[in-house]
Length: 594
Image (tube, rainbow, N blue to C red; front, side, top):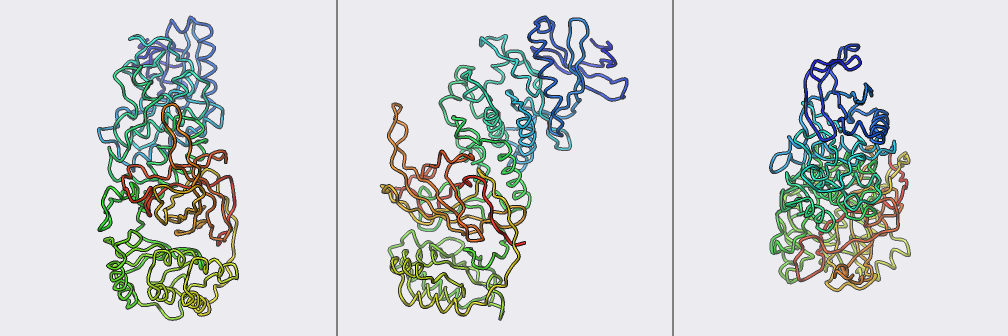
């Protein structure tokens, strides 16, 4: 083949070998460019059906005009042979780039976002890759990702697991019957020989992401059989045990892709790409990072939730009336130190209840947090949303503080410092009274509303909220070990959720849910875990957006295990501060500020 001219392509050198054919570097004499040529093996070329499918798949892949997908230039037939002419990509495959310990969060997001973009384009065109693996993903020196061999894996079905079915060492090639080489990246339905759709690629994509992040294969066995068994039966080793301090959002993205049942996975690479792109932007800007966990004082590490909300270095001012916790800033404030003293005193009398906690950041109680760094005095006549050192409270915050038995004087002082305009409608006062909120506290709430300056009317615009997109929430109170069916659960948004640069859900926004009936155990003794569902999240315009606890756009499934992974505490099933992901239940809209 070396030196031979195929049509107007002059073969220069051999790049690699696979069971299906050889790959060569060639010169395009007409356009004066270098190309890659895949030559179908004589054995495969002699099979009429394989030749037809080879050409059909190449024609389908050639219709994918995308920067992250290798470009097919031509199909050449000469005699009894078939040749596929494609873009020559210089770089290394992910199989060569992934070191022990992984490539890190930044590069995992950089590469996976491009891969998701390529997959969504292919799936939109009705093409499923079926052989996604590190060896089929090339990365150029500039960091550009190229997915190779699109759609060709459909041809490569091995019937026996023998030495002849092994992938040869030329990694990026599609290999005839390469089940042993690619079995570690198969989806459960692919391993079972079932009909495949785009969700099979999503599982394989999750396996590749797991390997990029950890440097370890998600499913590795001593043989193809044991690997297939692991894919069908076993869960992957938790990422936290292999790589420390990975943002929980990234872990959850991978975990959802690796669900055994296709209905439980991400249902669309379009949604997956949107989420990955948002996480990459936040990570690149420093909005999320790899936060180390410091357990609160007086609380065993085993009782701490596995994932803590990522700490943001800064927080933009929030809309007036939004249920947001404004972070304390450096300076001096009499009220802060008085509140700290009262909180320390109360800590000693409440039996060190875990509803009032002392951390390295200060004293925390449900509904607000007092930092140990003092805040500057408030500027006179400043708008509520801009007031230094104040916290924007809600009726629910007051109810939670009363439920935590925070002293009345502390609550009143916090209300006066915040000057929030509370909801004091008849129904709201009834709810406050039912929650045993003292009359003095309700009066302070009324006086605070009277002293708050009216917020100027702001122009708004409507933004879409895509169904299936997740955002992080935090549990506000402990869940008992034996929760009753229908037990109301209260969460809050761990950080703001933005759409096109506008805040749709503010940090601290209320999210509601409840406990579901305890399921029965199956014949494998699985199930029976306490599950919860989510109901609604309050948007910045006051509307209640429908949310659920399970991924996907469909409302059919809305449940999740309430017990956090790795939680071993005996005092509660799930401690306050545990974090989860909520998913928008269908496409919705929110009115935001222009």
